[in-house]
Length: 200
Image (cartoon, rainbow, N blue to C red; front, side):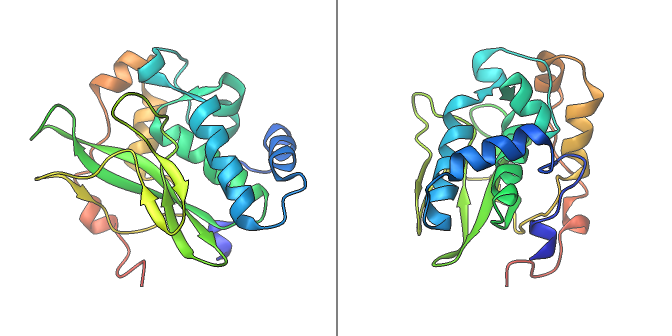
């Protein structure tokens, strides 16, 4: 589990602001489920989704997401992973490949999380932020994600300890949320990147 507890450039959970918020969210909690739910609901509800709220700047590093209180789904998942890891709870990143429009190509990645809970094992949660038609919740072991893949879409296998390179590129290459929206990541080389049988 060490990889899912580690600090890194984009999941920088040793940053002072993340440490402070992690302690606040864990205050008087008696188990990892309670802490994980508080962290999830904070990121889901208190951090604006960049495109839903048309707010910037473009963020990628967890501490920047917290500082600006906004981020695309990928960036919000970096912050949630950081808050969980700061509380000693293993957390990773998951992805779905979804239509960028109503259906069919072009496709783009959607970022979410998996958290390891003592009584449930790995459990996927989606902190992108709710709105009409989206009702992501924390209810282990039942999943309530923002999106259910339709025909041509997919849940990508794997729980990643670090963001995919194409996601980092999209969030660090462009200056505005509009530019990111026009170049949402879709990793063509993903099959070669996926670890074999990662979730076994």
